[in-house]
Length: 412
Image (tube, rainbow, N blue to C red; front, side):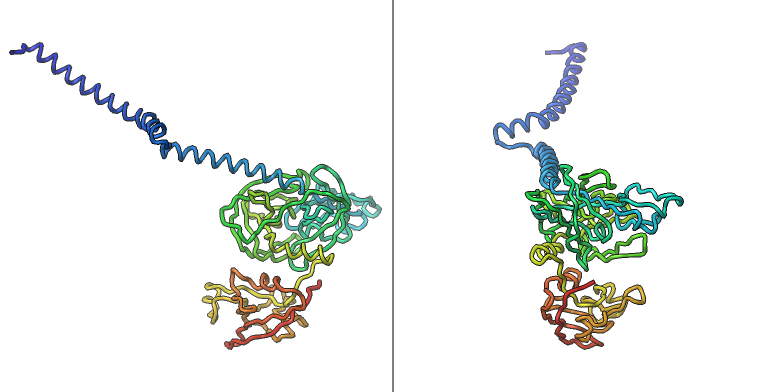
């Protein structure tokens, strides 16, 4: 059969339109099938969700779970977090304008009296504040030593339910920035102490504290930014204190947070907020709670904090220090002088002095435990008690030898 010209043109157009419609339909069907039909088929016939949906839903679920865990952790810990108000008699403050703002710098808006009435000023005024947390139901409170460093000051503890108690300094740690206060109360809520040795980088943490000495139980959230930091925290009066094995966090820590808890998502206290770097942003440091557990137990059993003492200043050796100084060992504790002329390498009359340790000795081991960045000298010494005899492996002028040392109680 012969087709005329018009029929041929009609068929050509029809075929072309069929291809176009089929192509567009196929493309749309593919997209629709990918976004709906295929997931529907996988879910209803195979009993599975698509990978795309699973990933999206898992992310949403994870976010909800973490947010819920944060809320639960705060609810668990907050009732045991307290604000500490520091007051002092005006007549005992010699220099109003230069009142120390130590570590976190946590003074209230304290105004100096005018020159006309300075000599006759009397009465109590609030001069600072900090944070603490309750570790026993009968009123033991853990905080920083620099919060409770003034023996002439008076301390008031304000609990989460706005109850006020007079507090006394029960004990201070001669080595760590830790103090224990006592209030006269019963059946108080307490915190649960975690295991700071299990902390991992990137782990979510929560800081709770009396920010700016005004906003009690302020909650901030971040992660563990670093572990095992050795920092020197100072005040504006020239004083300083070394914090060994500090935990670094980017959770916002503000003035007044000193002594407050750093908490994990299980609602356990894993560190004590202690210092911040004022030159950076969101760089705070906390004392691992495991370092404080011995203090807590010591206070509960003897009413004071007892620390063993060796009596040396040292620098932990690593590969970089060993290479730069051409040392024989790339581990150990190098006995060295401090920055000031009075900071001797070996304290005269100390257990180390009696055992014969001298400047530039390298303590390699304690009772067989190698001294390195994971096992610093201070931490290993803290595992013993005053009166214990330990064996030090020491590198002295190129010769290794064992030295017996009897530890003593550290006293200010």
